[in-house]
Length: 169
Image 1 (cartoon, rainbow, N blue to C red):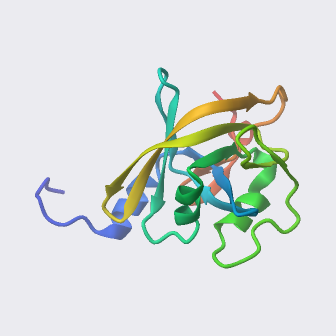
Image 2: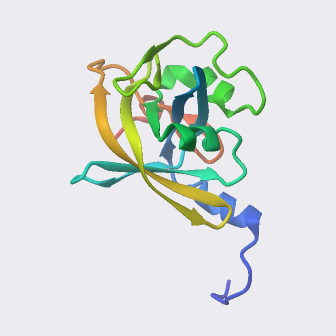
Image 3: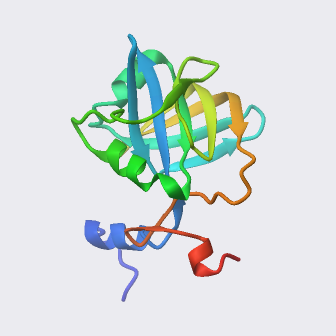
């Protein structure tokens, strides 16, 4: 295979990136009393000082303009037991919060009960990047659950994965 500057085939690009394991989060906010949320696997840390995190979202997202309006969001880091929640929040046009227990964060964002951890953020910056937006948030509060046996929900090669099932490190 040559290293030419020809266009990258989208299916090959998706396949290559699928070989990079990622955690699964649900980004949530509250606008005019309405809870908003979507599943997101493109989440990462940006800076320790100030504490910044980032996620990417499709420019055509129906949820993100409402989160932008709120100016704040929570990142719910899902546990391996929350595959159903990940799938539910990945659906368009459905009642994503049906049957989901929630509580309010310090900033007023809805937090999904049972998540591994959460971060409460204010929007710090937003950048257009191709067909996505890169959103950077400044972390204002967080919670780290002390449940030692709970593992994160991971996604690898198009499937949910379990660290323990594969022998861990």
